[in-house]
Length: 377
Image (cartoon, rainbow, N blue to C red):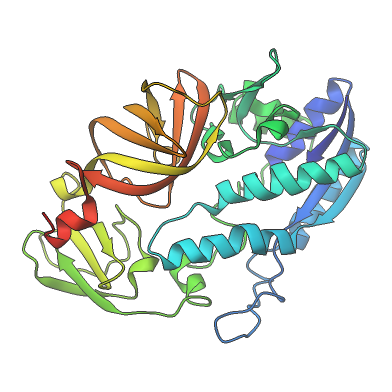
């Protein structure tokens, strides 16, 4: 087959390209440029100069070295506008609302498996491949998404919003092997990036502090941090949108009562609620409503017992999901800590990823968690 591989400059995509070539496929590579540090502006209209923070050119040079070593063509494609419109703008809007969005999931949905997929078609290439740790079963007309065999690296969580048409024509060569095996192959092939560190965080943020980066686009709105058990003010926050449920670090709260965890964000009243200890009941919820659902199977018509992840690297939790038109009601078998509005709920039956969507509302005993905290009965 003729396959377009997204070559990022990292070790995973490099080994993916190598494996596909070794299998006898006709491989073409492409490097995606998604962020323009000089063109993007902060809230004052000033360019945010982050060339030293998100070194895309270094990544491109690494990708070029690998492509040259493998004797493969490397294309460059610019998705800066698409990334701004479909990923970063949505990320900012959700953050302003006090939610905790996942831009990596948005990027996979709109850029890697939509814009990039269309780019492949324009090059006359039907198949796309990336270095994600997941598997696709192409044995039936409707492809199935499966967890990667290396469950410690499985990335199906980030791929849940893939359009079905893209899943049907996508390969994940690393889905059947472990990260240790990927590193071994890279070293055996003497790839210049064999020992390169895995990228962490979000490309447009790079190594900068997350909160400081967001201050470029969202003004600070200081307010009170409140102990939810005593209702006493225990500190000051920079703006509730800059924190996430379950967050422990960066709260600036002293005393011997802690450690402290964020348990609620009241965006309307600009209050951040915290609780002491990681077993505090206020951290837990028992259900949630999920919208923006993408099904990777035929949409369910009856309640289904399955498992769910509510953030990456979280263990699977037993749940029952019930479809309600375009949303899903998710009931937890046991209360779960730190379920966060704006994050993704991803559902599995055994190793198959069946779909997921954005957590729109978190509830406890039938009430919105924030209403319970405000004292609404």
